[in-house]
Length: 226
Image (tube, rainbow, N blue to C red; front, side, top):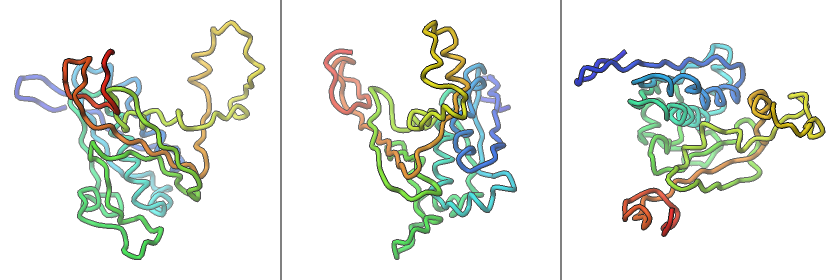
């Protein structure tokens, strides 16, 4: 834990990867704080980009974008912690230099993104779900709701996945209409990313909002009423 100047003790929650595929690692990071962070009185999150040994070479082959997305998903999952997060980035391609913008993509425009400059953790920058391992064929730009930001959706990637009903063992005809087991079925559902789909999640600028007395809040336009 950490001792703070006011005498409180902040519990440090460590994130360690355990999934068995690159996509599963990303999804694991998105949900890393569920059932933990919100139940602790005071907490901070520490995560690093170290990988299970059997996936290290595979994930490095996906390049810097994959690692940047992993870090961004970890940050989003730490949203319930009271004292923020710490990140260790030395295992990512380009390391801390890439994250801080000290390195750039190759000048020849190749697909090698191992040294691409990161936009994370800039809070004003877009967040992106990349189609890792598949060719990019289509882009969805999704605008967040009032008071949110683009990163808010990194902890719930299933919004942009398709439900694998065959793997789940259910179908649309299984609904008996009583609704009693709907919540449990949602928890057990299996979701997969769409091949080739890139999801861009921009963040709205802060602007004076009329219904909040002119307070500067993130929004795509002014709100006269809440």
